[in-house]
Length: 95
Image (cartoon, rainbow, N blue to C red; front, side, top):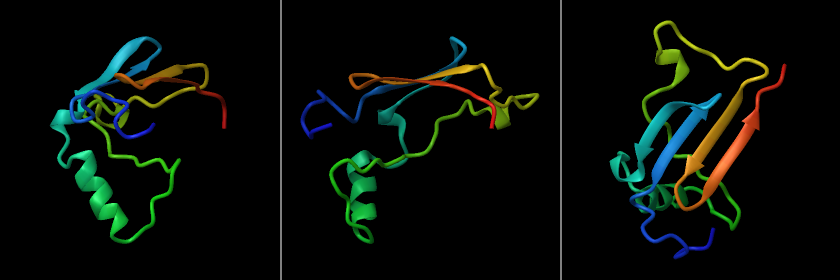
């Protein structure tokens, strides 16, 4: 996504749903390091090219930390949404 296309990339709602149930809900304003800081440090040792994807970590709500732990199973549907960007829908299939 071109720089400047989002109103405020430092304040984007993030949501992750499994089979329609919200498992993670957070905001980029709560990240330990801002996106510009992450890009600065990554670019010190790597050349970032257009189209590169930078992953920033995960907010609380991961399945391994649930009691009991919950893991994705074939047939489940995962929706990862970033406000202002869109939603990625993934069907979980057998390995």
